[in-house]
Amino acid sequence: MISKKMADSLNRHMNVELSSANLYLCMASCASDMGLKGAANWFMVQYREEMGHFMMFYTYLVDQGVNVSILASKAIPNSYKSLLDMMQKTLAHEQMITGCMNELSEQAINEKDHATRIFLQWFVTEQIEEENNDRDLIAKLKLVGDNGQGVLMIDAEMAQRVFIPPTGAPPVV
Ligand code: FEO
Image 1 (cartoon, helix red, strand yellow):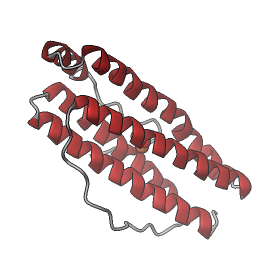
Image 2 (spheres, protein in one colour; image 1 turned 60 degrees about the vertical axis):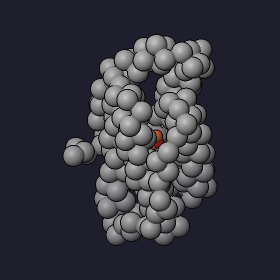
Image 3 (cartoon, protein in one colour; image 1 turned 90 degrees about the vertical axis):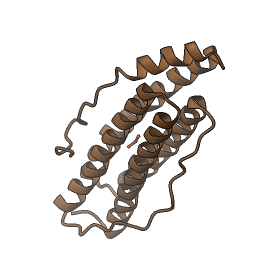
Image 4 (spheres, helix red, strand yellow; image 1 turned 90 degrees about the horizontal axis):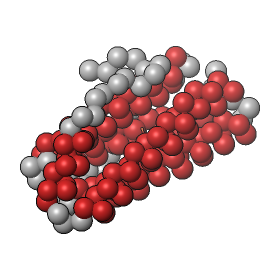
């Protein structure tokens, strides 16, 4: 079993994963609107990954006997200056998520809740890859600047991203 305090923290974070999914869904739409179909694919894969994370928290909480709550969420931004702007905001968002994972892990350690600490381990590691992918794309986008051909080359690279369900996550629709 987990404490009420831990369950509440995990439930809050489950909702953050859901809003992350919605953030990337809007970014996919914006990229598509800019004519960047490859970037739209990249953000759609990101959306599906976040839905996987959401389901991992949902399943963990339900398996621990918690009745989960879906909380009200704020409107999601759907206007960006450029692909670089979107990627910079993606990195900032993922850095915020990394901070959440560290806080949740610290709470689990303080409560000697080893099941939750082990559950969170996958996410702690995942955040390294998430931030790294974003930094790579930001560096490339800064190199090409306003050169449309360069942006289209990066867009073509982003078109190659394929969704791989997160390890341990239940199937995501
Ligand atoms: Fe669910 Fe991108 O962290």
